[in-house]
Every structure is written in structure tokens, then in C-alpha cells.
Length: 392
Image (cartoon, rainbow, N blue to C red; front, side, top):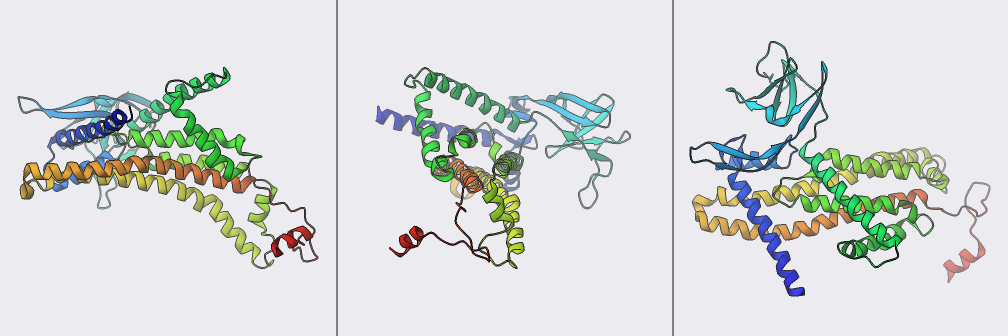
């Protein structure tokens, strides 16, 4: 059974690489032709890690030489000068100038590099100045259901179903069965190895639900990003920023008196340096900590996608010097090992984000025990038992 499971895991990784390679080979740059040149490869990789208003599975060339794209559109929801406007992303089409234009409710819209602009009434295409600012159009508020939103909703529904089932089995005091048996050791790991040691026995139960949600949400989305479906949810700054803000709000709202006293008026520090320490502590709590959370997750996941796609692209950039077979073999072998590492990174990044969130929350709710006596200058007078313990 164990041997079968190992072979099955290897088969899954090979299939992911195969379909990723096939998707790369069959995809097009800006919707025109196959990817052959280095510039087209670079553009495709950058396009792959960005969000999209439609869901593209793969592309192929028909017998008539026409490029066909297989996928499905997603709802486009915009707040424009005339209020709310919505339509399907399939209504966009390429005109002779290469711009993506659609007319809806008397308004004209253009989509360039996944950004939607509202054109002036007399304009037919967007013109840009030297600084690449649109001169005859302006951006709109985009509330569209993008590919990343679909990924978030999909994983959210799956997590709700899985953990609701696990909770019902716990309520019946039954041994978890099915997929719940896979979730149970991970739930216990987050509770016993992340939440309890970092937050403490007194407060960890209050925050375990959030930590479990963050851990599984990030981990499953990271794994989803390794599939050839083009998801890169945790590689979007908006997503990682929201997760970091949630952690910021939780540890800020949960901070006790000791937390704020140590932040605003550091005990046992000279009075003249306390204002400087307060500025540093405030910057750390409201800027440095959430920034480190969002950037670490975004950078590692995006870098992983870029590396894997770049290694797959070896078969195109080196096919003339190494031959088709040699370039394909080299690309497959390197991509295989990098994908194995990315599977580990997917778990590691979820673990690091959850661990740091638990650590920040634990620092906010920790009780520092200021029941000791203080001298005239405000310095703490240690108990005799503390001194005896330090001496021993």
C-alpha cells in the first residue's frame, strides 16, 4: 500500500508537469500564435502569474490555421461614470490596433494588460503619453469575479465542507473517517505545535480557529497554484495583504494592558529613550510585522512560479542549440525537481505565516507579571525566590 501511494504521488507530479508543459506549448502570447521567442516566453511567464478576467485552460491551432482558446468567461463588474456596469469577459474582442474594446450601456471599455479603462466618448482606442499614462481614458473601479476570486471561493467552499464534516464527527464522538482522517493530524499539529506554544494555555483556544483557517487556506491555495490551471492566488499582493491585515487587526484588538504599556512606555528603560522606543515599537506593530507577512508569502510563491515556468521554457529557448529532445529532457528533469521543492515550499509558507501570526498574537496577549514591587524610579524589585533561582 505504501509503495502504491509513493508511485501515485510521483504519477500526480509527472501529470502536473506534463499538462503544464503542454499548456505552455499550446498557449499564445497576447492571443497570437505559439510561443517561440525569448521575449514571448518572458511575456507569457509574467502574464501567467497575474490575475485574469477569464479562465483559459489551453490553446490549439485548428486545421484552418486559426488559433483556438479553450476556457470560459467570468463576470466583469465595473463602477463607471454611469454607475454599475456588468457583462461577461467574453464580450472583449481584439480590434485592428490590438486593443481589447467592448461597448456596453453607451460606454466604451478597453482592457490592456488585464487593466480595464473607460474610454472617452470620442475615443476608439487608448493613447498613452511618454510616461505610459492614458490620455483619453481613465481607470474604473473593478469588482470583477476574476480567476483568483474563483480560486478563493472554491477553496473556501471546500474548507467549509471538509471542516463541517469533521466537526460533526467530533460532535458524535466518533473516530474521523474518510478525508477527515487526513485533516485531523494537521488540525492537532496547528493546535499543539503552533497555537498553544506561542499563545499560551490560557488564550490559545480563542485564536486556534483563525490560525487553522489561515494555515489550510494558504496551504491549499499554494498547492492549487502548482496545477496547470493557472491559479496564483497567494502570489497576488491583494490577497497576501488582506491576510496580513487580518492578523494585524486581531493582535491589535487583542492586545492587553501589558502589551500597550511595553509598546508606548517601555518599562525598565531610561525615561529619555522611551519615546524613541515607542516610535520603533509602533512602526514594528503596524508596518514591519504585517509587511513581513505579506511580502514573504507573495515573494516566495511568485518566485516559485517564475522559476518553474522558466525551466519549462528551456525547451523553447534552447531547442536550436540542444535539439528538441535534449531541451525537452533537460526542461522536464529540472522542472520535476523544482516542483518537488515547491510542494515543500507550499507547506512551509503556510506554516511560517501561521507561526508568525501566532507569535504576534501571543506577544499581544502575554501577561508579563507586573505584580512585583517597584522602587522610586519605577524599576522592578525582584522577589527573593527569583533572585535565589537566578543565583542557583
